[in-house]
Image (tube, rainbow, N blue to C red; front, side, top):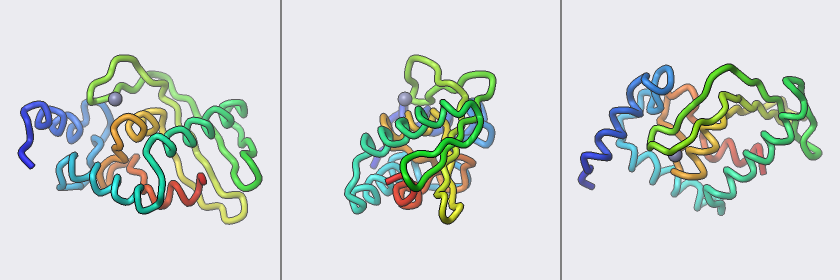
Length: 150
Ligand SMILES: [Zn+2]
C-alpha cells in the first residue's frame, strides 16, 4: 500500500525519540499499517476487539490506582499496581489532550506472570489499534495481554 505524506510524517515521529525514549517502533522494520494490521488479525483470531481490550485495561488501571503505588487485588486471579511519574505523554497521531504518565503493572497471582502498560498504550490500542513495534520498550503482545487480563 502506498503511504501518504501524512503516514510518512507519522512513521518518522513514531521511529524518533521525540515523544518516547527509543521511539514506538523498536527494531520493527514493518510500516505502521502492517504492524496494526498484523495485530488486528491476531485480535480477531482471539475473538476480541481493540475497544474491548482497551476497556479492560482501563478498568484494571482504575482499580489499581486506588492502591496508591501498592498492589491491589483485581478479581480472583490478578493483582495490579500503578506507578505515577511526573509529566505527560501525548499521542503521536496526533490527538488533542495529554495523558498522565502512569504505568500499570498487572500480574497473575498464581504464576507471577506480569505485563505492564502506560495510559498511552491504552489510548494507542483503543483508538489506533497500535500495540507498538517489535522491540519497543512498551510493545504489548496481544496474545500475552489478553491471556492475562481476560
Ligand atoms: Zn491518538
